Length: 128
Image 1 (cartoon, rainbow, N blue to C red):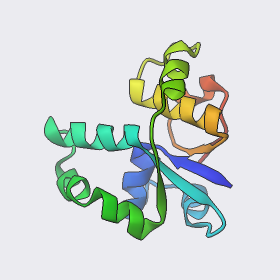
Image 2 (cartoon, one colour; image 1 turned 135 degrees about the vertical axis):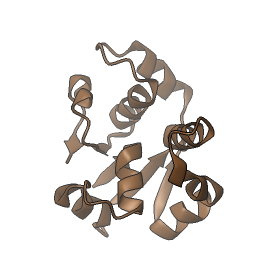
Image 3 (cartoon, rainbow, N blue to C red; image 1 turned 180 degrees about the horizontal axis):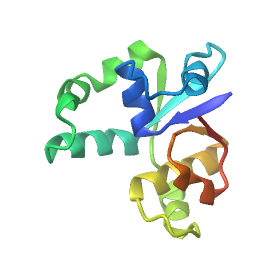
Image 4 (cartoon, helix red, strand yellow; image 1 turned 90 degrees about the vertical axis):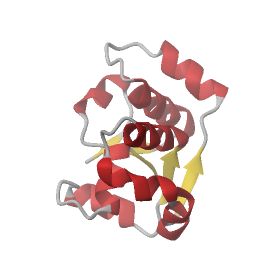
């Protein structure tokens, strides 16, 4: 299984937040899964820390690479194909971070770990 974590799922896994569903946690901790974190997630976290919406996120930003390495996460960079698909996908959901993750899931054949029902309109596999 190849999975991409939505930003909240990554942060909830990292902080052992009980809001992370048992099904999502099991998928993330499945040793046979290849787990990805998008560069869009890195941008979202750093942006929220910068504007004061993610107070506990500063240590995450300062140690991002080591957190990913220690957690066994692969980095998934945004490509031009990802960005163009994100901009062209039909749907009313406007969040640019979500559109980027959905496009990456479509093009890379990934399942998305997310609680957000807005992703359903993009026709991707969601695990929660």
